[in-house]
Image 1 (cartoon, rainbow, N blue to C red):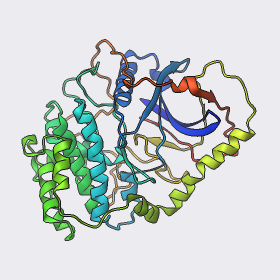
Image 2 (cartoon, rainbow, N blue to C red):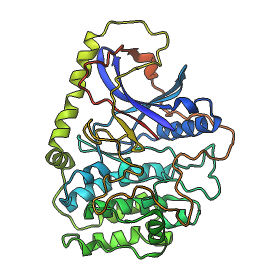
Image 3 (cartoon, rainbow, N blue to C red):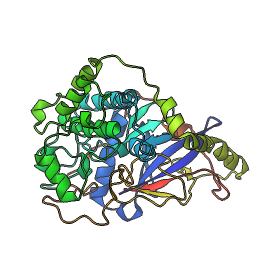
Image 4 (cartoon, rainbow, N blue to C red):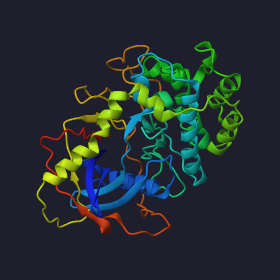
Length: 399
């Protein structure tokens, strides 16, 4: 549904890199797609929290609606797990990731928003040590202008809560179930649910939650008990919302403090170095490019390279440029325990439709932050780029 490009802009003489999201060209005139895009923009601009990817500007030009967002230099949790080469993540690091993700979800839950698509692909681990939640594209809130189509699943199958498979309305406890799956996978290093789509759906609906203690002995009993609560089949057994989960996490026995940035630097040293060159290379391109007037200040020059990522949200550097794009549902790609089947057989419930257009309703206005500040388009001078010869792994993806 959407395409995201890295763009470079000059703001008051300073080079800045951002992520620019647009609708696919084939959907620009689709009223349902535009409505969903604007709903995502409304959610993104309403949330202003360090653990949520920031939206900087919403607008429209002759290429359709656009959303300018913070560029996160780092990797997704799914990518980290895929590149860990079978080494288990320290418990303290896994807890730090979940604590920060919980803080971001708490900000959303306080505003009546439910993410509905919490997964390793949407937990971005910045090389600065900050975890950011991305992709509120199917989030639901009290002011959403769309409503869920009957019997249509939205989200990634392996991270759906049991009530979602029963087509019941999602609430904050639904997000916590999905976050529990992410925590389990971070601790165990493999997918919690394996097999084809039908087997995964049956496991989510009927099988008891797995015991993380069967895979590693260094998980504190209190953490194992919390995981059982997060993965409970009935939502009433889970914490009521992310604030309640934060309180539970704070009650865990103190342990060695975790430095996420240090851990990422040790596991992904080459990736950290590679992304560290982006700004330097972008500055070289800007300096070499001739200045040309732009008729529309909302147009930014994307630095395009031939590396497409499919369905992974705003995670950067999900693999070297030579790697092929992952298959569908690339949450931990490739799965660590077994190969991904070429095609899943039909499942007992409809397949998840992450970008299924929802029922028609009148679009609502895009909400901006209450604190008025100068629009970025008022402060920006667009930079003209020449992408040839560029050694920056600029990326784009289609939802």
